[in-house]
Image: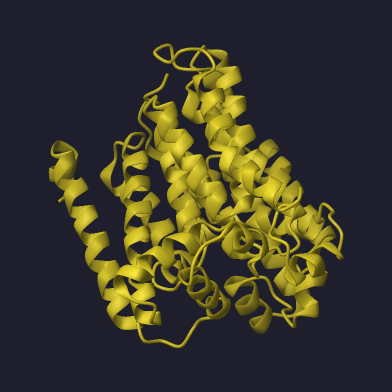
Length: 399
């Protein structure tokens, strides 16, 4: 099968695309009538509120913390398919199919090995959060689609596509703004010879205009004017070291099938460097934020909840420390290879963007009032592509 896939890549593309579509359709059929899942309940209410009519006043005061693209998209879909929960949910697998398919094309531009490419896609689409977002009405999948478009735009030398992706990503979930500095850094440090100077800088600036317009509408804040925003702002904004520990552990935990073979190639001295991530987790254990505990949430995701229920507190901390060490070990190995390529003059723009995106995520996300495993999906996508490139990589097409 894989021999055929290597010699006929288009057949594999069609097979993957059809398999994704069939799987997502089956998932919707299975889960379409489930009761609202968690935050989906109030997301559905907000979609129906937008379905009654969109105005500047609604965009300024709707009762959510997330940007409005998801509510606009689902309310428009509701006018076509209806506003029942199963009808609204039907849009979710369509968006997920788009996000997964675009991401697959980004993977295949870098990974020649069909098994490795499929593994890189699999660790994302079979992530429990990706599965849930593929059938329930949440605000995250559009942001992942936007990020996938942005990465494909960088890799294919299409600044306009990166701008479109950035608009979609940041007007669905504001925290995807971490992609802006990554795009700027990649453009400033190295750009494809076939792209005019500063074109990707312009795409970054143009891509943030809708979010900036929303911030102006929200009187300079990063969310609509609502009691919900006021409650979370009262907590204050700070860099949460416990959240940083959580996100350090996520690549090792959720990308273990990619991270282990790569980390095993690391030499002993660099394992010592990676172990510092584990020490950090011991110093600042993964835990819920103040805002989360006040709402009765004492874990930060499926994995944290499962491990915490099975192990004592010290065992949970040890687990996440090991995962952080493993993930950072894999990234250290890949980073060492990237630096070696850089010294020899190979400076592919996509590689710089991926690394800048990971670092930017780790700087931006700990400022969130609510750390959550789900929010690591963009980090996992970027990290999985780096891991897959180093396990069986093709030359960067933008070199």
